[in-house]
Length: 248
Image (cartoon, rainbow, N blue to C red):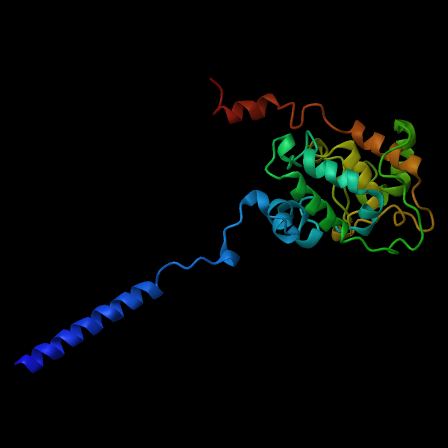
């Protein structure tokens, strides 16, 4: 009997020891490499761009609802200060929001710098084959009358004589579109094009005749003149009656 009691006691001790070791082995282990990083400490460009920019500008800057940031012409005319200012403060009156904390956004200055440097890494030296594009910022105001002529020369073959589109390209005077883009954005697109949409840059509208800096300003003046003061207005009486459920 004593022999069996001894065996039972030893078995119980062994079971307790096993349970204790199991509990120890399953206890949380501190792993510095698995520490949670605060959102404000994330400096990885791919993570920051994916979370804040890719939704509009496309994966790896390929373009989407907004223009491609990896466009080599855009990167040739927009310096780091331009990219940083736009990322930090956004573009008022357009869907481009401010991302810097100093402007009401969520990103720190270091995170903005990481985005700027990452976008700059997409630049392709030599992509312009030695040609000099018009400057990012206009050096002189555009002229509406000259802009009408410049539009007909450089843009009408795709966007139609009056800008309302053709079988080659969509309307460029659509009120909703113009209400969502600034004059600077229009200028940037005229110069850099939108290759992701088969829209040429400043060299490709007319063979052998790149559009000049002044003509870019003039075209932008013409486009800006088409922007409605109140997008979507005025509503007709018939549409208002229908929207209100009929006459009362």
